[in-house]
Image (tube, rainbow, N blue to C red; front, side, top):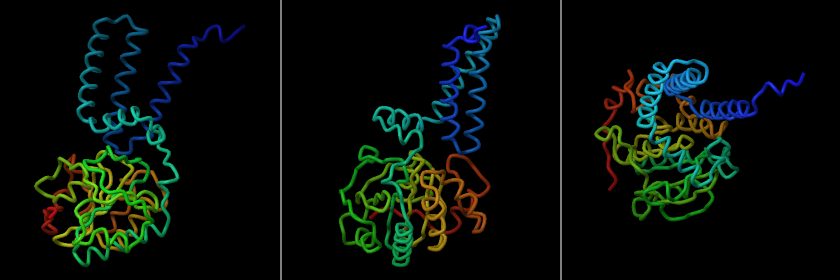
Length: 302
């Protein structure tokens, strides 16, 4: 008896492609609420497919199809940033970023982390505003920014970072883009976040804006008014932090697991510090009320 005669090859390909797509989606989702939404949506899609294929229930099939359509529109609104990023990656052919495999240029080492933390600490002590974007695998391109800045392409060092953010230089207002152990460009203008406009200054909004759009990049922010250190990852802001705390976070986020979720590292290690850290701006949490009580954080770029 030939077993393959009873199996439809198209059905096998359908199941294979659907399973691959589902695995890719679930591997890219790290936030629990987003994972729940995705599971519910896929359950509705599976239910609609089952009813249409195996059950002769025309009214139920129409109702389920309408429900799937409504959920699809809702998710398109909720995930418009992620869907836009997906289309950008597909259009530019950057599939390595899509499957989560960062290239060698995004590999950082211990000296990179040390230079970042030391420069941030010294900038904080002198109250010199700074914004450093660390690309850990998002493969940021000039078209991803409002202004791509001035190409630098130099080895990362503490002295170079301090020079770029000197108040008498023309590049100190923008951000510095770091990939691996090299500074790619300076004076970069980032897209601003639409959340917390009345609470945060321009640098913090820029850090939140770029990390909301790209999940494999982080931003180190130094407030020009207060010298407060902050770290943004996946649209979340941890502040205020000390230089030693920043060093620990950088080791967890880019030192040991390049290209993995920054939210997990920030949430697990954040329990040892003050309660005014890591609050999602897109949802309300119990810790979100503590942000505005620490200091006056509404600085703007000069």
